[in-house]
Length: 260
Image (cartoon, rainbow, N blue to C red):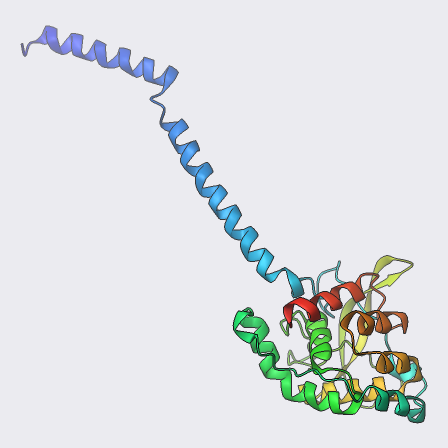
């Protein structure tokens, strides 16, 4: 059977099969589409599960964050500093308890536990001064810095340790860090370059934050009624701490869910 004629007809048969395959294929493309579709569905489901676990706090406002991140307006130097006005408020809130270390840490994401453990001592010290639960202040620091990942930087690249987005007004005598921020004016975001306070440590940031809350009459009601997360968050927003219309809702969500 091995002759010139059989080789000729075999070649013709190969050509004919090639033409048929070129027109119809053998279904390999369909198989690949089905397999890839299953993989993509699995990946999408995994991303949904992951985003559901990390959604709270991922929407944190930052001083150097994206253009859509909300920046806060609170220059402590432009406010009155009458300590006597808030002394009674701090006393009435002294019965509020809220440890920065929760007993349910095992169920929290690693980045939340690390953030909480790192700042717990400073937050608890600030609680003694203000009467505001340490957990509430940790939630605000998380919202401001994206769980510590986007703290404002000094010019040399080092951390400013500014956990609460407090601006550096004319009365501030310490170091200053400059950052692009987003302010909301009449509900619309506007990018601006602002100066922020720079601290030597996280503990100093908490101390300055506690001093600002305690010495400014505009936060008197916040200290007097700060036992509830939602009341605390909305009180800060009403007092002018934030310009983001959703700030109170975001802060309440972090305190109630991420730090619960």
